[in-house]
Amino acid sequence: MKKIFLIVILIFTLFLLAIKYNSRLKTIKVGDEVPAFILKDENGNSLTINSSIRKPMVIYFYPKDDTPGCIKEACKFRDEFEKFLKLGVFVVGISGDSVESHLEFKEKYRLPFTLLADTRNEVRKLFGVPKSMLFLPGRVTYVIDNMGVVQYIFNSQFGAEKHIENALQKLKEL
Image (cartoon, rainbow, N blue to C red; front, side, top):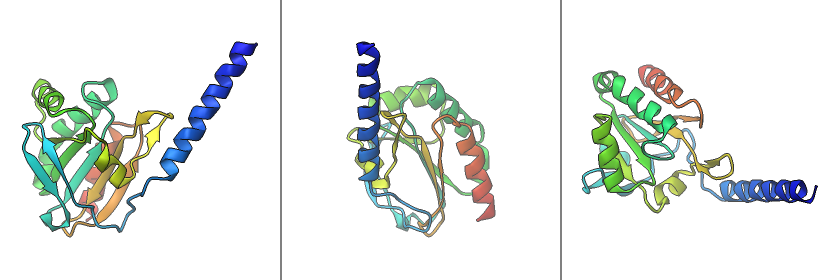
């Protein structure tokens, strides 16, 4: 009985810590300008993202390279990539993995889009991407128009493939 009580207390404490962490995040909302940031891509080159890019973008945050949900999501972006190209969209995936991990992930699954290494989770925090299930880095997709304004946000940890479908739908409406 004591063990069950301690487990319940531990889970409750983790839950409160996650709420406190997520509530302190600055959150990007629809209508906000995409925040400027610089991260290294899978080849170690610095890439600057800001509102002056003047082309539509999809920036998606995912938990971790080479994990089941992230593989599904990345491969769905790969399989639908021609549709994004036809719409003139720049697709970027971001996680806390290293440049080296991103390169392996990109090569292994033949991903045609850029992966950025946010190893300190600074950009994740800049966007206000919440953790899910108390400790997992969140899975959130942002659709940004050619003026650098966020037009759509989709947050779903377990609907990995829905991120692509929803982003394409929103891009067609722009």
